[in-house]
Image (tube, rainbow, N blue to C red; front, side, top):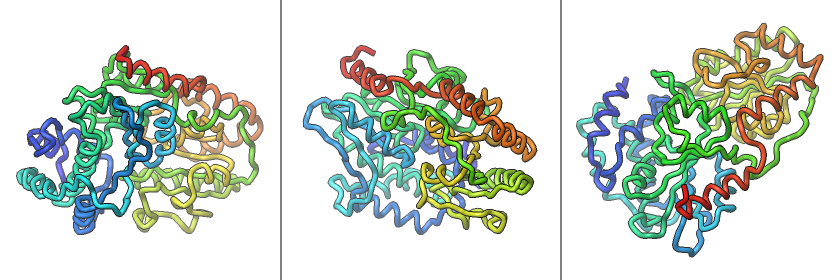
Length: 416
């Protein structure tokens, strides 16, 4: 078992070759949220070798103008939104990580053995070091790709700069006087000090936030209001908020799993929902997190009691069409569902007590869920009104395109 606090401290003391400005422990600490014990050392080693030999970086959009704003994507669940944002912002470059089967222009194969050697005194398993080195390779390639030392970049933007790759690039950018911007949705677990885990460790100079909920979360972390810009969720760059809730009658509950290292909590949520469904005669569909496989849940996964298990082949939008109500812990899926007015209830547990002001949409046990379902079955209009009310608190819904464009126009002019 790794002691993350000691490993983070040790990594922060190392001045890594080519990345001397980066506190690598700060970048690595997101992995406290994941179960790394199941990762194969051999598989991770081959992944590092592939990253060293081949180009996984794809520039989706690139203009010939001298002053660029770079958008880095490391969260697949928000890829479409971020790419759309890059499309509406002048002088922008959208950078994605995909396998292109093309020899890398800046192949860093000579660097990763040096990085591993520099970590020789860090007390953590080899596969953990390989995971970190893999992310360092991605970041190093992207840093070279945009030629940071030239005058072609004025800003770097990230979906969540607490992701390891983005944290490396963000820290490097700050050290080289480049403006950094983070699209911070902030729906994360709390750290030991009761602060939102990702926001408390954000390295970017500016935070683009969805609404008042995340503004309050940032204030808990001591972030000054001058760093925050309320722009709304980028989902609304692609679609408009629904005006009416769609009422279905399939008598089916849909459970959205959180995945990662939260398997035990996922199982707890499934069993609570199954108990309720059995009592009132509903079916239960379960949507796995894209990063997890059913086998990772082991024998505790009650598949024989579940009517249908849905994998990554079915996205969350398609899944919502299959069920009457959805149940989740309160991740970004919840915000998506508010935009779409998809009836959604948040399961409260000790694991994720982040979202608040959710009276009428949250439950702790099967009896409370049963009461909510019966209440809204008799009065669906009241559920629609509550969803709209909460949506206005969690995200701006008007002039979202203009909000983003105005921010980047001011950033370009240096008026922020």
